[in-house]
Length: 222
Length: 222
DNA sequence: ACCTGAACACCGTTCAAGT
DNA sequence: ACCTGAACACCGTTCAAGT
Image (cartoon, rainbow over all chains, first blue to last red; front, side, top):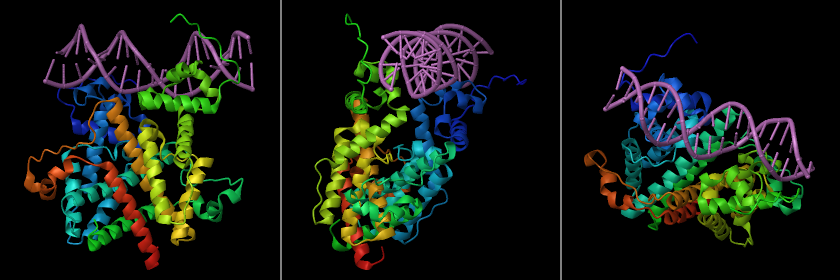
């Protein structure tokens, strides 16, 4: 109110400060709160100052994606058990999405071409190579893994963000089966369909991926 | 220019006409072109007329999602081969996303609670039941399948839309490995990482899911 | 009951002017 | 070189007024 805004010293704004402010806004107020106006307020700068560091809103979101990659890999170290490593890396991505749902919902799954993304690629390729795949097949399985993990983590972020910043229950599904005979299987499983335990689904997805990878190597049909 | 707009007769606007107009705009001009102003022009109506049929832009997008569900299931019929059916259903979703990339990029994966979504749920549950799963386990595997297929189809839509309406090559990945020894696996697979054949990745993902499902049933560890 | 047109409270982005 | 403030061309949504 009474405090007048001092002009920011030139060079005092950094990309890491901007990304930090963006993460903080996303965490506390959700995806739609990430505007240049809101960022300016958080940074105690002009809203347009951010343009000196990122060419567009989308560019900033890519930087947020890189930060999520960084968080996912923080203190990670590979073991000699590729099944364990792939499982571990998947849950790390899931946990980051659960801690920063709004950021994950808009940024996870974006290709950043950045150094932390590359570290994630390296970690996954290492495990897949250890599993026994080489060359093109290793890359295709890496991509299948990335699709699976990033897709699930992004969706989890979106669900949590929706639940937090609006007040909609996104974990309960409702099908009113007006004509049960038309959908006999859905009718029979109605109760199980109602509430979804997404982390159990994710656990199952990882297990299926790892099992299928092992099978492909054993069968040599990768 | 010279043509004056006659007022639309009341009741002449329908939800199906609006969804059709939305699909047409998305197909020809991309996701960002779907505005109320543009819809009004397409429908030869006031931009705000749509609000008499959908409560918000998001509501309209959910209706687009239902339409995509409808297209995915059109003329589908189940066989007695659950592996074939799951594969078939997956490629149907993929093909719809490829034909309507902009619509898929914003709508696929949204929960509609609608009748066509329910038909898709029924078709997948039928196949999974036929594979040998029951109750809670059938539902969890249905969800794993839906995550996989819808996630991949939505991502495919986003890539195609990005490529069509901007002119960015989203199929070529570039990692400049300034320090190759830090990422030995990525370095070794650099050439294979450069160009991605996403439909081959999708084919592999489906195969891995089906294989893992079969294995889970055989092992009784579902 | 449904469609229109004006108004409201925002957006992201550009750019000349400051320091 | 970097930050500011005004301006531009939009948005989605609301609502009183038409028919």
